[in-house]
Length: 315
Length: 199
Length: 64
Image 1: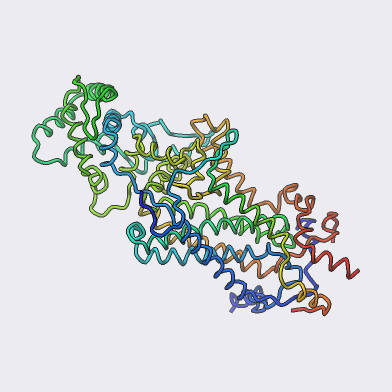
Image 2 (image 1 turned 45 degrees about the horizontal axis):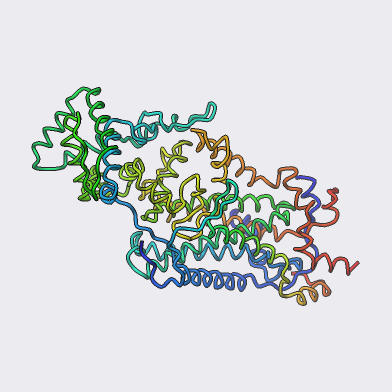
């Protein structure tokens, strides 16, 4: 028992009638009414999701470049690390703490197969494509990488006209057949479905198509327009002009300042800081100084002014 | 029966649902606790209606969108009233007189409500959900939580959002409210306490 | 982008952002946060109904 709480005596004074049930009912009606009024005034946002079909049609060069990077293992997801693969591109640590590494690969994604080879293998009745896939798979790893790198480089200078993409000729080997076929599959909507239901008919896990899209530029382009990027304090924001998760203000704050801003371990570091602060928040009653501020800055004199006045008058 | 005896000793009916409050309950700041509770009830109620027709309903009917809007605004009102409530309780030092657990359960309720809201945001099945999930996954993965809590897995997130987190939030809020009823509303800071003297 | 049926005000346009040094926040969020502060201050300052009832209870020394 702290000295502080030992002086808080149980109330031996007067009680006035107070109907708690009525209070709850009034609160319920008021809050529900407020929610309904806000709904009528502002409704709620519902920006349609992006699809791989849309992505490949509106940004065909970006799609093709991303697909090539999935093939040659240079995309964000391909290099990510746990829980998707054994890469190191996004594996974070803080001193001796390496939880991402410790928990390992729990959701394996082989980007070359998942995003390019296997979807192409679902396309029936195209012997040229089938031969190209076999030719690619039987080539040595170094050759595969060279083809993919050459293709990705050429896509930079490719001419996109609407949804169609004209990649300049180059040394791409079988990719010259495979990549346009993948683009066509994507633009038809086949890749959206294929990435979702490749392992089973009923599926609710959108990890594969989401990671693929996140490796490209479409989601980020939309997010920037809606002020949802990290450096735009986007964590707090909502699409449109709606209020967002304003309670995340302190969480996103750390990302805006050093050393977190430029750290490759920013996520882990910020979570550690917020964990400490959250524990401190729960334990405020026990933290000297913090728990005493309400005594030093007497807001309570305003809250209980009627009570203090009555006590003075009764003396 | 021992459990019943313990429960009734801690919370006899007149403490569980008293018909009076100490005369120092004399400020509007006191209504923000019950307002937060009312907002939580509105969230759960509107959530139940959304659950009746499934997660895609609100995208293609006006009625569905209406209840989604109520659900969203009730969440904004919930955090709004909860924060005003916690500010008030802080400035009242409401943990005094053996009420530390009241403060702690309240703080934990806030900390559980945040990921409860996050699972909702990533279950929207729209662009916002796509963006939030592909961003939040990095923080989850970095701390190792991504190995068993996959924000891009809609099925998992929806299950956590409509079942597991509501149970957790309601359980901690129930504990919080019962502790308030058990200890009573904290008395005003007295002169002796302000001087830091012993009782 | 679907315009919500029946919303009096259409908030489906990119947010107005307030920039202040490195600090960036949408107007909507600022409105919410300022409203919380205003409501907190009002909650403390506005008189709470039932003062006469409470005073009568004090004078009578009413106990539960």
